[in-house]
Image 1 (cartoon, rainbow, N blue to C red):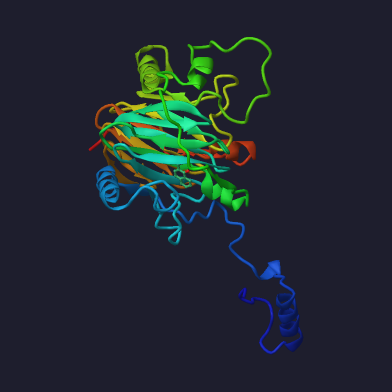
Image 2 (image 1 turned 180 degrees about the horizontal axis):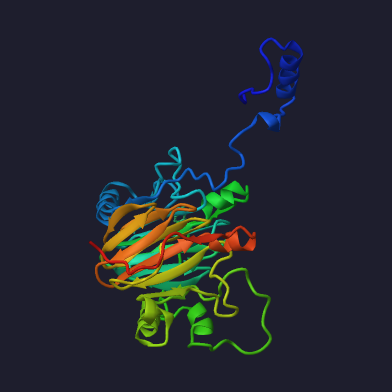
Length: 363
Ligand code: 1HN
């Protein structure tokens, strides 16, 4: 029941009106407050999960919990302390670590929420996306777009852990979640060194298949972005004297659909950042939320003025309109995934510089 503000005590006619309104499942706007806030009212809080703890707990789950227990995925979801126990990292983003033991298989299924994987360490796992085997090694980005079949295989003799991100909370809020399990059979046989998607769309910079273009899917047709390419591009930005990256000490790339430059998935933007000590990237905030996976290096991520020491494997939730700046001890490589394409498409993306770009020195 809204708090009443305008009726005088004992006004029986008004009391009856309010009761009748409530009885008809209506609410008077003039009694509601807190709907239109001057800036976003965000429930999720800025938060860091420790990579070491995520690894330890994943390993223990690997020993104690069989892979087929619940959804055929051994996944620890990031549950933001501001979200009342929901298994969501922010209002719109699911984040998790997934642990696949030596010799294990996570069988095929598909769902409308889109997913991506960023490999934090190790290699040797294959994810098949609509039957196309994609090898996963440290630093690789692997896409499993909406409604594509996907299954994971670890034929090696060491467990592999990776970071999963999905737009599940967003798709759930839109009442658009569909899920279909596979038939339980998993793919067998040899896997190609380069996936079909890479052979067609990852041949080389600016080289795309000729001929009439097929109707474009809503996602990138390139499904694996290799670390060697990402690393070389970041290093190239920093060594090119005329680049903004060289001037600021902050290189960043956006993973894009090679056919049109758009984001890799309609709902999710992926980026890789390399910060050097003393860089001058400004403190800023923007609408929409971000998850950060720390890949290489150590430093501090300052969120709404609170310092979070970071190390490889750490995962960080940056809710909407949280001010953010990064301090690097040495080269610091951060993978980020955000819902920015959604905010941009809806005309809701806003950004604000919070302070002057002074060199970001770590204490
Ligand atoms: C999923 O399908 C995977 O396929 C991982 O690896 C995490 C979290 C929620 C819903 C589906 C996967 C997931 C998921």
